[in-house]
Image (spheres, rainbow, N blue to C red):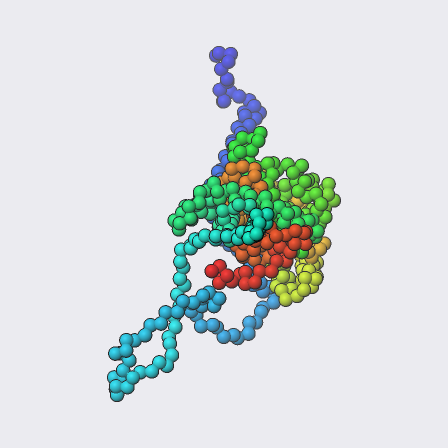
Length: 529
């Protein structure tokens, strides 16, 4: 037998044979674990690409219905132990919703010919006794017009030394081609309706407006720069908020000094969680701690964010109370549930049990909000804090017990293990909402504010320059802040574009803040005509 030929299995000693079998079993187990890990990763990528983005679950318990990241339910569900008796009520007659009474009416009368206005019985002439009315909504294409400014010139009839001309109206963009209404239309179409500028140019050309995309882009950039004084005031008010929400998303800028076009930049969003609703967007080339420190310099309230470590550094340096987001914690368990095979999705699975407990936590929040719907702000916060102390504290204890039970018994790299590890690492921040009724449970406010940008980004994909990215951030800020204050963005922007050039003092600019501005009938469709 050759010296390098391994001995036959039947000639091996029992102990050595057992050791080889054990080694092979361990290798097989490791291979199976790797296979399962890659299968889970593949399934997660497939879901991210092709599955619905909603986090709604197929087998919801009642408590789960209280949580929805995209929407807030308008009615609370009754508690299980307290049946609710609903009084009898009359149902409205089903039918089509009437058209807005503020819309202008173009009345068209339909009359019988004179030879048909005769009674068939006795030949008398019929008299009008009323009308039957039906209404239709009419939409006409955009009507473009030109505003011609004529500045009258005056001269002395006796000499040539006194010539005067009426002053030109002040404009936000000097020698701008578009009126304030037109500028508001362009900005709203791009940032509210996600209509790229090249499509706007094509649309305007269809109705007789020969405006090229380059002109629209220049106007947008100049507008973004011109409204900076208003943005500075918004940031000052944000610093006084008791709670500030933070989040960020990617943005690609093609022409940026020292950076490749493929490198990702970022758009940061900050939202006030108390006081006047403020939504601030800021462009930055990085997601670094230095950038975050600059953005949050001056903030004195509590900071609500996800688990990105940079926010923890900011909170520590600025001595802010750092709040954790239960929506992000819950999302990890949704991913863990989605990775389960169908036969394993039972009510006693740790991921599903945790989702049910978090759902009950949101149920307490929703019921407290419903109870305080008609109350003052102070009363609402007191009701919410009382509900948290009476019910949420117990739920938090149950969640913590469930967490510690499964934390070290679950593979750390599995989806459930990652969810448990994230929850454990964020735990001190996640339970701080129990201390104050003004502290939110999650960061959905910031996520909802940033969603229009993310949707719009799918249409226009990138910013051409840094100036364009900064202008977009400023204009997004004004639109989202206007919406948060119940204003129609088009009306607000048109008014602000007209009045900002006339502002000579800080008080004049302050009067244009969305929660202070006076826009008569700004929300009425009739004001668009």
